[in-house]
Length: 129
Image 1 (cartoon, rainbow, N blue to C red):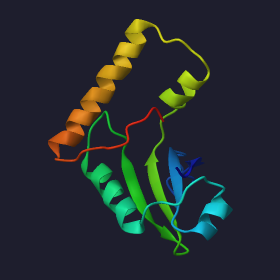
Image 2 (cartoon, rainbow, N blue to C red; image 1 turned 90 degrees about the horizontal axis):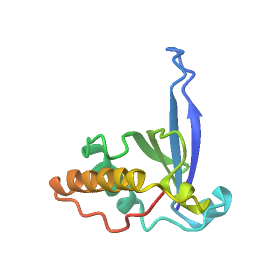
Image 3 (cartoon, one colour; image 1 turned 45 degrees about the vertical axis):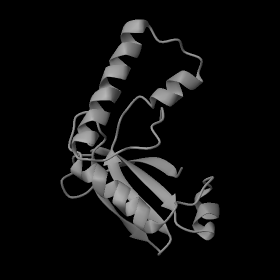
Image 4 (cartoon, rainbow, N blue to C red; image 1 turned 135 degrees about the horizontal axis):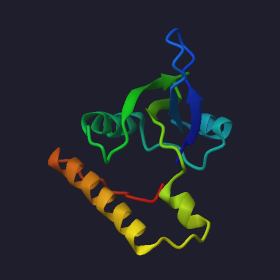
């Protein structure tokens, strides 16, 4: 849940690096303004999950660069931008993956989960997003 947007850094460095920004509603007012389906469980839960991602430095786990709360009711996270959409997007189109491609996804997901487990973190809602 939450809304994810692609943004470009046009700061003093002028590098134009792309990032993803995820906005999560912490209350019903924010949920309506963000037009998302759910309110986050709690600010503490969201912060704990993001801190775990920050510590999970792995080539198979998305990088988190910054996070915080805006207006007291919107949790924002600046993430590594992964071009090309999600695995879920690909599967939603009805695309049938070649066995070798599917196997690469399975291996990468398993390595990411193993890296997270090495930090004694259990991810409870793995999904193709």
